[in-house]
Length: 266
Image (tube, rainbow, N blue to C red; front, side):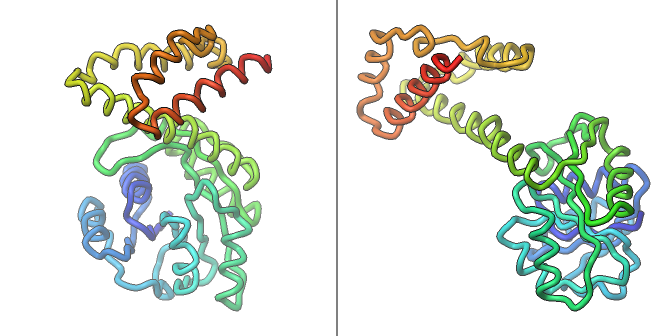
């Protein structure tokens, strides 16, 4: 398909390169920061940089909206699409209805809308095999849905039709599994750094933890540590060590209580 990308952040960067590698043509790239749009366009074959959101003369058929949730309203207010174009957002939390309503509020005619959500954490410059990334698809009509499914199946081995409500649940779960987990690892590094210990010493146990969690149906089945053993002596010793940092004490206590409560609920 002929495609334009609105947004040149993490998702836009990965999708642009992947789509072109699968013989789709990227026509235009738009970003509020022209330099970012230029950087992405320079990595594509014939993409041009758009400095405004008037796409009325564009030959593109699909417009991928890869912007933050906060920016979506502003973009929908300003964007002008060619006739019969498809507008698909990549958000994990914004519903299909949200996009449809935004377009109806700001435009006279209904627009074919869809969701093209890759369930993954992305970083610009870090290569990622999209074949392993689940894509969640939703659309305003069957024809649009099929077009988005066809494209997603070219990029990935895992494509699902997922409703907005289901996607919201997946997004919440992903925040726990990805963002919160990464933050805990960052805190672990701060703890080791504070005592001039190498964070690398923790990497084997981190790898083994993820390996075990992904090998079983329920990660709770392989939970270890003082909380699951209800070893109050060690727990108190850890809390005493952390007492100078109220934030870490609170996190430690909340996580310990959650592990114990979760175990008791089985």
